[in-house]
Amino acid sequence: MNKLITTFKHIFAIEELRGRIFNTLLFIAFFRLGSYIVLPGVDATKLTQAGDGGLFGLLNMFSGGALSNASVFALGIMPYISASIAIQLLTIALPYFQKMQKDGESGRKKLNQITRILTIFVTAAQGFTYLQVTIPAEAILVDPWFFRLYGVAILIGGTMLCMWLGEKITDKGIGNGISMLIMIGIVSRFPASLLQEAGSRGMAGALLFILEVIALFFVVMGAVMVTQAVRRIPVQYAKQVVGSKMSVGGERQYIPLKLNASGVMPIIFAQALMFIPGLVAQSFAEKSEFAQSVAQAFGDFTTWQYNALFAFLIVIFTFFYTAISINPTQISDDMKRGGGFVPGVKPGEETSNFIASILDRITLPGALMLSIIAILPAIANLFGVTRGFASFFGGTSLLILVGVVLDTLQQIESYLLMRKYEGLMQSGRVKGRSEMISR
Image (tube, rainbow, N blue to C red):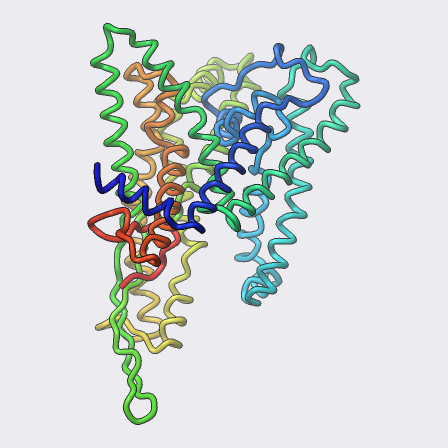
């Protein structure tokens, strides 16, 4: 405890770090305030609440309840995330975007500008659909078409403001701003979910509630292990003589291939597709008993049919996203140009095949572990945990929380080490998702 108190004193003793933490808290407070400002022309008392399952529940979780509140920040930064994913896929598929990606800082600025413009169009499309489908007619106090017209404009402004807040947190605060806003939206639901779970257990179930909290702790530790696990490939760099005396190189480094290289993207992609079977079956439910059973099975996220398909899609998307995000040939070429080689493996094609084989072997267990984490909320709910509290036992929310917290701790520890203070962990550096090469 004394070490923890001393570490906090060191954190706030660094003026720059202290200022960044206060800036982050200020931007987060502004973001949370916007999630409670209801769109003009909407009767908030007549709004229906979002469920915990499905795509709508996922988006509502990311926005911290702003979606179900019909707030000016209802869509949050999700349109920006969608646009970023689209641009990332285009940089793999189209040579024009590949060239911009390789142009350094100027190319990065062009891609960012294209992403912002695409965000406006994505927000307009999602905003119109959201206003049309989600908000009940009885909750709209003005002409419906006039409401949708100015409502889309307000939602676009809200999303762009959220995007600006995220960029400001990155520049003036601590951590990755966009990820931080998503994390805050998720964390904001935790106190209410915890109180709801405690209230449902009562005094008679106090011991069971304590066991649930302990189980949650171990689940979080497991998620940290999956997020941090890496397979290190040794790389030896040839020694080069510069001038008559100085020599450079000759060092052994490592390429860390992460067990979960795809992060939360497979879960998000799979979650976005899980509404399709139920939607298709619902359209044939009146004519077929089988369609009715399918619609019922995929309308509940706790059924074995739902979770089996969910886990299968996560495995497929994990292999897909890992394949498009990690290029063994490019890694091999970069090593060859830098004078590096894997001991016992010839540079070039053999190195590329060696890295690809290791990547294939670690992706399958990583995908299976990711699938288990994704379906843990359904398992917890089957054991009697309320849906709100069960969502923190795994899935997208837990992985995002773990990843963002690790990245933020890594930045704070970097400030401490630069000022010659002790780090946050006695056992060594905190390793966040941004760390690519380690010795």
